[in-house]
Image (cartoon, rainbow, N blue to C red):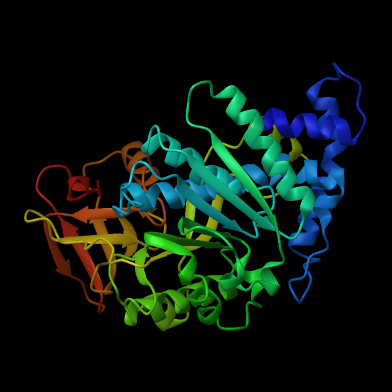
Amino acid sequence: MENFWLKKAAEAWRVPAGTPTGELLEKVRGAVGELSNLFTTERPRDGRFRDYMSDPKLLAAYGLFFFPQSFARADFAVRRLLEIYDWEPKKDASAPLRILDLGSGAAPCGFAAAGIFREKFPGREIVLTALDRSRDAVSAAREIAREENEASGNAPKITVEPLVADLKKLVPAKLSLPPQDLILLGWSLNEAVPATDDAVPFLKNLAPLLARNGALVVLEPALRITAERLRRASETFAQNPGNPFYRLAPELGAHPCPLLREGVFWEHEVRKWSPPETLEFLNRTLFREIAALKFSWCALGNAPGKKFDVPAEATDVVRLVSPMESTKTCLRFVCVNPKGEKRSVEIPTRGLSKSEVKKFAAEWQRGDIAVLTGTLSPLGNEGHFRLESTGTQTSGIRQFV
C-alpha cells in the first residue's frame, strides 16, 4: 500500500510527476513530526483529536509513517489469534467473512485482518466495515481496497463499506450491520473511553455485534495506564466467562495477571519488524523509536478459547513477559504459565560461546510462548528457578507451535 500513500503525498504537496521519492519524502517529514507530537506530547487530555485526516498532507503523512506500524501490530495479533490460540470464525463457507474496524481511520488494522482472512480462508468473500468520524479517512480506505483488488487479480475481493460515525457516541444496537466475525479496536478504545475510566461497559456493549464464534481484538498503546486498563478489563471477562465474553488471548489461561497484581511492571508486547524504506527515510531526522513495535492487546470471544495443556514430555508452557536477557553465566527471563504463576527462569549457558548465547537470546521476544523441558529447580528466592536440561543447555526451551 506504500505506492498509494506516495501518490497521496504527491497530490497533497502538488509535486510534479517524476519527482524522486526522497525529495517528496523530505516535504512529508514535517507533517509526520506534527502528527507524532499530536499523538504524544500534545495529545488532547480528553482524547478528542481534531479531524487531522481531513488535511490531505496530514492524511498522507499518517499513511506513510503510522499506517504501516498499525498494520504490522494488528497483523501480529490477528495472526497469533488464528495460528497459536486456534480461533477460527464461523465455518459457513457460503457466507462472507465480516470485519468491523471501529475508529478505523484509514483502516490499517482492518486491512491487516482482511489480508490474513484472504490467506487463511481462500475463496471467501471479505467485507470490511470501516467506521470512523472522519469521512476522508474512510474514503481513503475505500480507495485502498479498490487499488488492492485491482492488483490482486483473481484473489477474493475485499469490499470496504465506509461508515461515518463518532465512536464516542456509538450506540452499537443502532448499527444496522450483519453479525461480525471480527471486531477490531485499534488504538481507539482510549479515544472512545478516557484511559482513567473502566473499559468493561463499553466493550460489553459490542457483544451483540459479534457473530457466533466471533472475536473482538483490542490493541492499545504500551503505556502503563492503557495497558493496565486493558488487562483489568480482560481479567473481568476471564473471571466471568461468557458474560458476555470469554478471554481468548494473549494469556494462556483465565487467571489474574501477576504483573498487574504486583504493580511494578506492566504486560505488553515488543515485536521486531522490518519497517518500509519510506518510513525509515522519514525517520532519519525525526529519531522516533521504530525498530520494535510496542503495544498491548487482548482478544475476547463469545465462545471458549484454547486450553493450553502442558505436553507430556514438557515441564511447563509459559508466555514470556520480559525480554530474554543474557548474563555471563545464564540466560534469564520472566514468564507466566497457564495457572497464572509468575516465574523467573535462568538457563545456564556454560559451554556456549558468546555469539551462540547472543544468537539464541535474539530469537526470543516479549510475548513469545515457550515449552520448557528438563528440570526446573527452585533457587533461593521464591518464584525463581533454574532450567537444567540434557544435551545442549538451551535445548530446555523451545517455541510453542
